[in-house]
Amino acid sequence: MTNDIKPSICFFEDHQSVRFQPLTLTRPADNLRVGALTIAEKWKADLESETFLRKTEPHLRAIFQTDYSFTEQVFWINSRLLPHPAIVRQVNNLEPGECIQKDDTLFIALVDRTVSQKWLDDGVDTSTLTVRPPDDYPRLLDELWDLLKFNPDEIQQDIRRIPEMHRFHINGNDGVHQYGSHPVYKAPGAVVEPGVTFITTKGPVLIDRNAHIMAGSRIRGPAAIGRRATIKMGTKVYENCTVGPVCKVAGEINNVIFHSYSNKSHDGFTGNSIFGQWCNLGADTNTSNLKNSYGEVKFADWQSGEKRNTGQQFLGTIMGDHSKTGINTMLNTGTNCGVCCNIFDSGFPPTLSRSFSWVGTNGSEV
Image 1: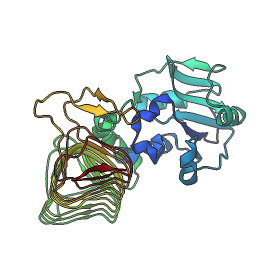
Image 2 (image 1 turned 90 degrees about the horizontal axis):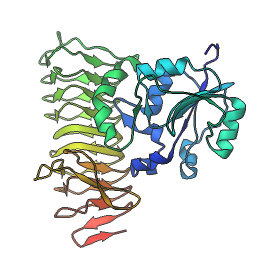
Image 3 (image 1 turned 90 degrees about the vertical axis):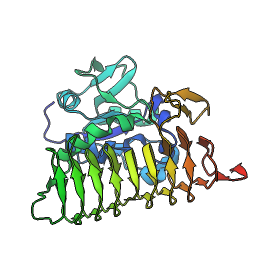
Image 4 (image 1 turned 30 degrees about the vertical axis):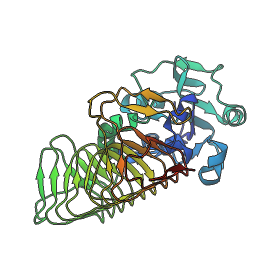
């Protein structure tokens, strides 16, 4: 493809996107965070596109609406697709009227403005396009827990996508220690207090602009600490964790993604879990991520409510935006919690809490 003007990017969702509820009840799938960045931020960086649009669900348009000012050519990108060097190279070699597709799954298409407008009105239709198979197996998210599976590598991939990231030289920072060969990266304005230990034997640590790592914290890479996030004193951050922008965490976290503006400000353990925006875990909230039988975790499908096998031995809690827990809350293995829930049960609350549920000692109310 040769063109001086970079094509627009327009994200679309297919039938599989409903699998990412309850997180996608309040955001399009391209707004999911995996690694340090959202899916949309990754593609925008890799394709160097300045025009970014999405075909989204009607109930999300008030917040995520775009003006659909297409350039002459438009990349239509499946919102579940993660950019990776192999697929990005193939995308950059697409000609107008071509798409990358396997079986019935469309990954990316390059079409003109006229076709784009028709797809906005009538839906995506690749019947007239030339189909190219993917050169390599693309990284396509099929389930919620795939965010956790791809998170470690995406943290490393995101280093090159954040131009403000520079290597943090431990020497000269009294009381700060590092063990391991992978670097620690730090953006301007980030603060690392004395007594912080970085263990980078398995991967790097990314600390974004104006983040604050308080004294005595221990962070194992790969890990990503977002803009204006706070790691409180003595926090234990194990590998494969993403603490999103303006989040605040304490206690012990392992293989966890916090999207943004969410807090776990006190002691307690959470592992193999994903939290949306504006969630708050009360003091000493704990999330189980392993069954006593060590067996496969089952997870309730959001739409049907039926539990199905996940193929995962470790899986904790998936929590939608604006949900909260009271002090000493115990969340069971494979908990699916919707949007705007208030959970304060003295025992184990249900593993499926519908949105706007009030879950207390007398049961659950909506």
